[in-house]
Image 1 (cartoon, rainbow, N blue to C red):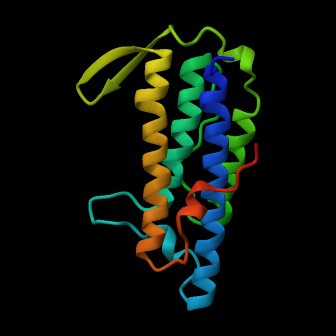
Image 2: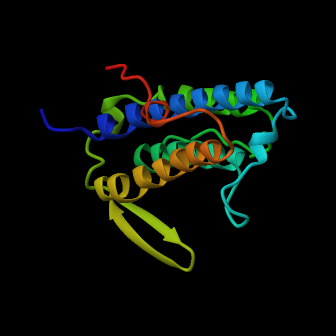
Length: 170
């Protein structure tokens, strides 16, 4: 059985979002254990010119929603990027997962070859659906998940590779 567009993205996005959700739990527990102000890690970043942990969660969510919208044409829920607490970030993740779960394999059938316009800064191009997913959407998503993980590691949260990989759910 060939790998379908659905299998290459929707379960992958959902699993990655669940990993982020678990990382937020560990961040919150770390704050409590260390006596940090609630939400202190949400504002943490790896470098002054990089986005915060909260922004990484928002961008990962946006990548999933936007990719699904571009490939299927289904309107993704708009989220205003105003989350400042763990509860709000976790609610955003849950809403994103709920949206992704409305997409079925049939919705993505045939999207491998459809043209997906992509604008980056002042330049743009059109990629096939498969190239868009494999060369842009998935790497972008994993960049934000990885960066969220790295921010927390940098802040002393006891997480490792297995926290990033998540539990295999089949």
